[in-house]
Image 1 (cartoon, rainbow over the protein chains, first blue to last red):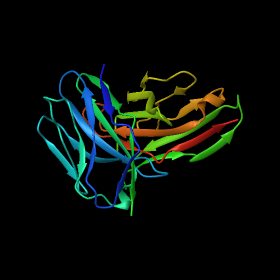
Image 2 (image 1 turned 60 degrees about the horizontal axis):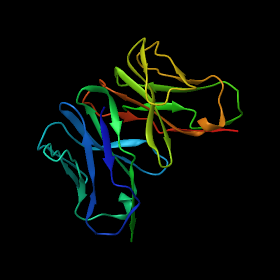
Image 3 (image 1 turned 30 degrees about the horizontal axis):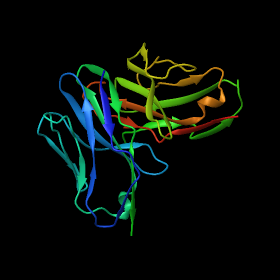
Image 4 (image 1 turned 135 degrees about the vertical axis):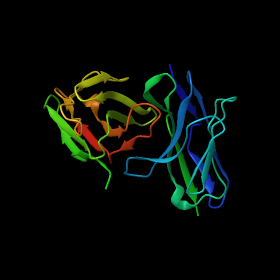
Length: 112
Length: 113
C-alpha cells in the first residue's frame, strides 16, 4: 500500500533561518502530493500541492518539488518567521488508492 | 464561505454514553472522511465515504460508526465510548477521494472518562 515518511520533529530554528522538512513516499502509479499545515488549535490547511513529476508547488514562501526519481517531496522555505511555527504534514492521494495517506507530521518551532 | 463544520468542538463524557459528532460541508464534495489525531501517531483514518450511502472502513474503525444519508453530512457515532477513544477528531472532505486536496474542519476534542 501507499506510505509517507517524514522527518521527526520538533525542528527548532531561529527566525530567518532556512527550513527543510524531508518527505519521501511509496506509491504505485502517479499520486498527487501535498503539504498541509496545522496551526495550534486548528484543523489542517492545504499549504501547497503538486500533481505530476517535476511540478513545483509554492505558497507563502514555501516550496516543494515532486521528485519521482527519488520519490521525495521535501518542503523548503528560505527564511522562516515566528508565525510559521506549526505542525506540517506531507500527504499523497491517488496512485492506485482512493484513500489519502498522511505522514506523522513534523513540528516546527521558530524562535525570535 | 467554503467550509467543513464540526460540532461539538469540545466534549467531556463518560464511558458507555452514546455520542454523535456531526460534520457538514457546503462544497458539494463527494468524498468525506473522519480522522483521529493522537500524539506520536499522526492522523489515522477512521471511516470514509465516496458518496451518499457508500461508506468504508479506514485504518482504525473499531468502536465507531458512520452514515452518509445526505451528501453534505457525515456524522461520527460512538455507541459505547471508552477511554481509549479520547482523542482529537477531524472531519474532512474533497471533491473526490483521488488526487484532490482535502478540506478539514477545526476539530473536536473528545475526552471519555
